Each structure stands twice: as structure tokens, then as C-alpha cells.
Length: 73
Image (cartoon, rainbow, N blue to C red; front, top):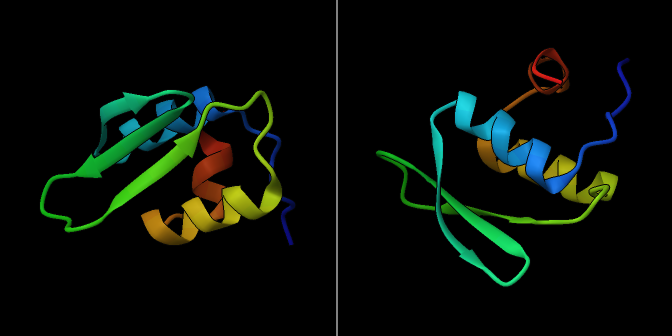
């Protein structure tokens, strides 16, 4: 089993843009991302290192696997 990588908020934004998500709003220290055709949004905090629980939740919401995330790091 592959472990969750250490990812910053900015790196996660770059990864999600490769999968069709676009940053719509930056409010304070958070990016809000949307995908065309999707009714929900993903909020990404701009931390140096995202907590593994946050990374897991973002992956779940974006329907991505660990392998897809690590491919673009």
C-alpha cells in the first residue's frame, strides 16, 4: 500500500488543475476549486504541509487515488 505523500496546499492546487479543477476564489488562506459539470467545490487550505486527513478528504471529494496524486509530484 502506498503512503500518502507530503503535499502543500499550493502543490495540491496544481495537481487538481491537471484533473480539470479550476481555482475560482481565493479567500484568506484557502482556495476554492470547482470543476465544470460538478455541483460541489473543494476547499484547499494554503498550508506548507497538508494534514493526511485533509489530503485524504480532498482525494475522496475529487475522486482521485494516491497513485494519481504522486504521479504529478
